[in-house]
Length: 303
Image (cartoon, rainbow, N blue to C red; front, side):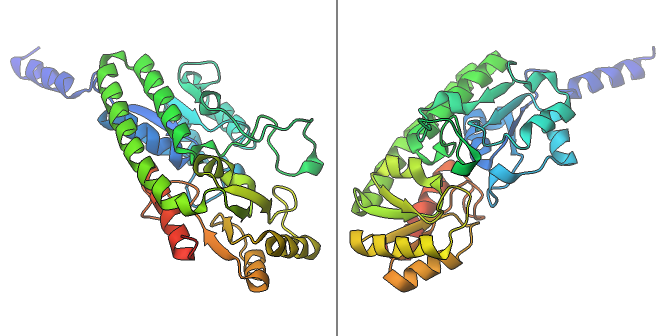
């Protein structure tokens, strides 16, 4: 081999990233998980979401691009509690990536890291609507759970990439410090709603209410996942008036007709709350999500 060829080969080897230098590819089922993973992983990870924050992650569909992302993943993060039950199993089967199958180090179901609320006390049937047997899966809407998720992700990144454990732990410490500081601000902003009854459209905000002391007095849906009829709305009108409920909270992707009717009949304020990172272009981080919730409540006149 000539000296020129030896030099070329040496340069090529230097340009190839080593395993310790290459960013871990983290694939998350929601933008919330991806945002937390990116905050904890920093420059050592590339975190992407399989679903956009503008849509209900219950009803995603496995697409070729998603299969490719899972095939390339080093770590798969999922909300769990059956949130992705309709589309993730066939996606994993099609991707054929042993690194991220259940039971592997590259598979992390974050529902096991938090105390789940809304666990049914009786067997779940179809008549109960969109009820999850393991509990309510919208747990990321409590900042305390956000920290638990970040801790679990940091531990798993360290297990997969031990050479950079110190960096992951430093990023986690920064995340926790900022979360605690912002939590104080969020609690102060939402203090006027503490112990006050609110109506929710769907069951998504159970953890938000638990975190900040709101009392969910009823839901626009008669059962989760079922749009309300006239009779149910009339019962809600009576309840709102009787209990002097002043606020209705709902997700951006549900129909607005029912909320408008209740507002016209009772004067209740309606706040359309972002419920995920990526709900709007301005909500790019986990901290932005709660800033956006506070802003939406202020805009509604509830604060």
